[in-house]
Length: 402
Image (tube, rainbow, N blue to C red; front, side, top):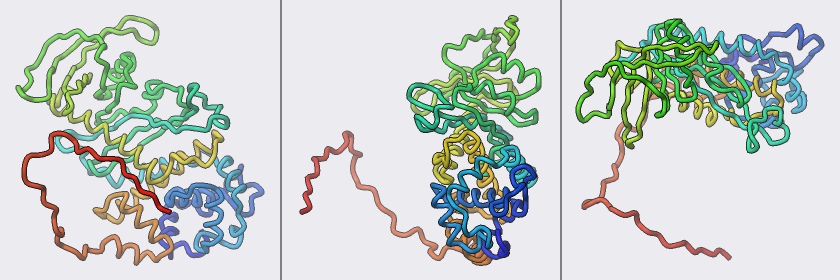
């Protein structure tokens, strides 16, 4: 952020954002210290390092010369609190989408899931707010919350990234946002039961949007014709069906879709409606199984970027922190793609945090260092005999330390 941008790992990473010298004409009119560009860099670094409060961010800034210049040595927690509420959300959104376009350019040759193709998974995650300060986002008697509606792009099994998000309060239903997240391309969109809306499916068909959607067991369909399913497979039905519904103007409509039913390893039934006819029933069920990738993505950003720990209960601050966390994620993925490393994103983040104040050469050497131990070590052998049928019973442990 200061004069040492190319030297340390974190400064070189943040330099990829190219916002260090940015001043907003509206927000930074009289700002001398904490300009919009510097604030974005500070908050992105804090999200990567999982800093939990403005006080921790301010203290780390004070003791880290590479992240500051003479004007930033005295930034306080209250200044950071005010600044995140002042940051233009549209600017953070543009910065995030710019990173997304750079990721798309670097992954344009990836083919998605083998034998299935490119997928876009739609879902939303909930972030809880305090009972009093979060009353503006009232959802129920038990919870105030906001949602991050996400379209996750699956470039390949190891490369996923959010193509677009829409923030809302938790009272907004998933299907209300779905049309704004859908892209008309060759990808197949995968949705869960939160998007059960036949009028929505009809609009997708009109726009040539391919989708696989899980529906409820009570959803009514009229079977037109059935295709045989392999004996002994989890598949129980593959049929063309007719669905009747009423559109937004309450006019009766009908459409033809494909219904695929199967059971998982725990014998739980799944019903999928789709307009994809050029894949087998097994591939349709496999497409829906990949919906789990968005659950893993939500878990990743909450656990490793600590998005679950919100700095503020202010609405603008929350929307801004969502985009800051996504900018941090996209920055990390860009780094992985540019370095062309096989390391996982979590492993790369761990190294970025460990080598934040080290040189870039030390960092890249650590990334590409070959393992010193080639053997798998001594492997634990299983006990001979039949497996235990009933779980072992333990007695209560009684330990007293005086």
